Amino acid sequence: MYQLGHYGVSLVVFSPFGFAFLRLGRPELAFVTGAAMLGLSMLPDVDHRVPFVSHRGPTHSLLFAAAVGGAFAGAGHLLADAGSDLGVSVAPGVFGLSLPAFGFSVGALTVVAHLLGDVITPMGVNFLWPFTRSRYSLSLWPAKSRAANYGLFASGIFVASSALFLAVKL
Image (tube, rainbow, N blue to C red; front, side, top):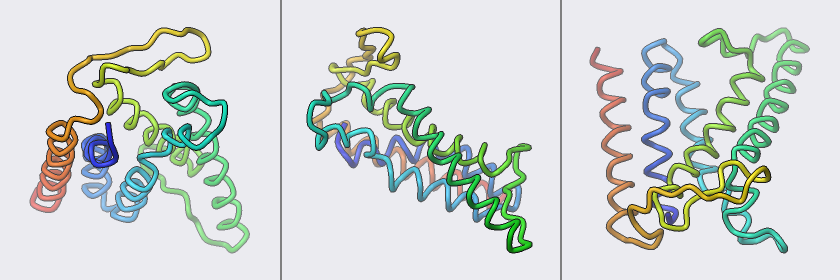
């Protein structure tokens, strides 16, 4: 998928979490999660700019999702420590998650959303790199399909808007 399609998939994946955060009275968590997922929706495609890394190789795997989640967890740990040093609680306290666990979840989910966007293309994704060379694909549309990219983006806008509407109206 191209950038617009990945935005759409990220919005669809984010929507149930955004809805839950809003219903729990935590709009700041909905905003942070949505901003992170949209802002980093193209992170796995950094492989285009890294020499000797094949496209849809290491950065398009569950191992990379775990690594990004680990980086977010580390940031969450630093934020929690900084908050406690200042006497401020910054732990999200949602779903029983600590700030590092919340960070891990957001980071990993961001990459997984990208992988879901790419698994629908014929090129597919090697979820289990480096353990196998197998690629998984639903082979629905080529990545360059304008209809698919715009359709995914429109779907993401619709699902996210519906989640926001329901969260506010319920």
